[in-house]
Image (cartoon, rainbow, N blue to C red):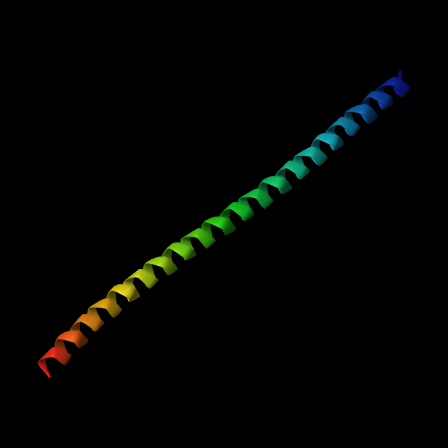
Length: 75
């Protein structure tokens, strides 16, 4: 009787250990996926900000060129 109970306990412990191992693997994979997704989102946001800054600078340079042309015509 005691041997059977000990055997069942050992089997249950093995099942629990395997479940915990799988859970740990899944958690690690999820953390890595979240980290990769976050890094990608940050890079996309940075590219958007950089693109907007470049467009703003191009617009400013265009306005400055127009003002220089007007000034040159007056001079």
